[in-house]
Figure 1 (cartoon, rainbow, N blue to C red):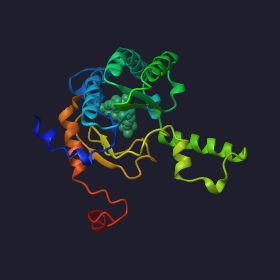
Figure 2: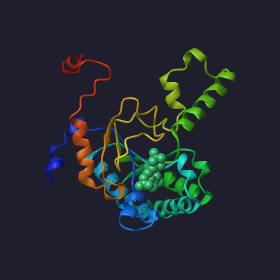
Figure 3: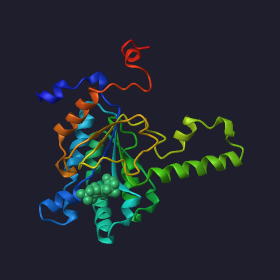
Figure 4: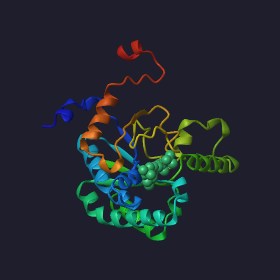
Length: 250
Ligand code: IPE
Ligand code: IPE
Ligand code: MG
C-alpha cells in the first residue's frame, strides 16, 4: 500500500476540492513544443485526479478548465482548447458512466461553440443520476460574471415581488450562483507556481485552504493529490474561532 495514502485521515477529508489546472503552456515550451501540446497532455492529470479523488471518497472535485479571460488568448489556441474539450468529453463518457461519475459544468457555457454545448449537455444528462463523485468543469467561467448574474437575477425577483430585500442572505445568494448545487470549497489547489485566484470561485472559497505547488499541470499525479490532502489535514480550520474552542469542540 502507498505510504502517503495510508497517512490520509479518512475523517478529515476535504469534501470539495477545486483545482486551478495551470502550466500547460510552460510544460510544452520546456519540451520545445507548441502550447497546445501541453493542453493535450493535461488529460492524464485530469483523469488521474478525478480517479484518485473518487477512490478517496471525496464527493466534489471542481476543475478550472477555461476562464472568461481565456477567450482573449490567440484564436488558434482557443479553437484547439474547444476541440480538445469536445473530443475528450465524448471519449470519456463511457468511463464516466462506468465509474459512476456525475459530470457538472459551471460558467457561461452558452458562449461555448454549439458542438461543445451539445456534447457537454449530453454528458451531463447521461451522468445525472451517478453518485460516486460530482466532477464539475468550470468552462467559460468567471467568478465576477457569476456574481453579476446572481445580482441581476435576484434583483429581477425583488422587482417582481418574489423576494423581499430583507430576506436576501447567504443562502439566497448561493442559490443564484452557478454552484447552487455544490458545497463551499474546502481545499483549493493551484499548479505551476502562480499564487493567485484568477477569478475562480471567489464567493465559494471564502474559507477554503489554499495549496500551491510548482508542478506544471500535465505532471500532476495521484501522489501530488495525496500531498495536497496531507498538507490540508495538518491545518487547523478555525472559522474565526480560537484554537482552544476548536480543540474542545465548543
Ligand atoms: C492552463 O495552462 C490551461 C488553461 C488556462 C486553459 P496555461 O495554458 O495557462 O499554461 P501556462 O500558464 O501558459 O503555462
Ligand atoms: C487560470 O489560468 C484559468 C485556468 C486554469 C483555466 P490562467 O493561466 O489563465 O491564469 P492567469 O491569467 O495566468 O492568472
Ligand atoms: Mg496559465
